[in-house]
Length: 88
Length: 227
Image 1 (tube, helix red, strand yellow):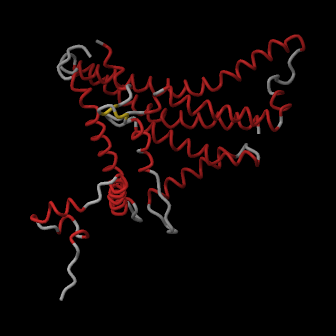
Image 2 (image 1 turned 135 degrees about the vertical axis):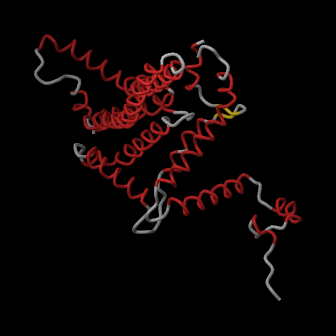
Image 3 (image 1 turned 180 degrees about the horizontal axis):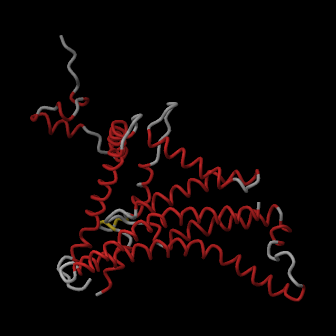
């Protein structure tokens, strides 16, 4: 009949809700696997927004905005002491 | 107390994991990767144009053996420039405000130029310690002075970069605190302060790029003397 796609190879959006735990268990959570996942994610972003012939300001601005947000999250525990301080 | 003004320079840590490595590696995300295309994306083209313009300018006075240093000098300059400019975004951390990092960059490179000179052409590089045409009685003192100025070069390189960036960031924080605190009290003065802040930010962008360039320029100058 039809060649069913293996559960291991389906994308996240195509996984049925009941199959989610199985799908998660089959993912590669080794350091090499995580690095590979990050690399693939970054390549998808890069090829969609930056690696185009007439890329605009938006592609790199999203990257910088994400960097600012992440830096805020990292320094939050330090900054929260400044909220009610009278003299800075 | 005023302690919080210097908190922006503390090395960021998340549950004990130093995050400075991520701040130093982030510029790699912004620099072009190798492809086998002839016409690359706009970002690559722009950065390549900038890099070639700077390379041609910088390597003009260097002789043939000095051209071997092109890769490390230009990549260091791009590294420093991106790090400095990224530090101007809100909430980000600038690794070049840490003296440790700048000395780690300046000292080995300066030492490399000195050792290269002493190894390949010892007479010429020692001759640089005495400027031409000095009166004879002054020679001993001048040699001592020139030696001291030679020894102080790595310190100057590292501290110059650190001090410029630290001072700039501190000024931005101080003036923005003034502007915000004065807003309910004296709005006119607050608007004046905001104008000053705008000018200062433009200056900081310029300083970020210029300091990186000066670092590399001085290194190439030291290289010219010794290679």
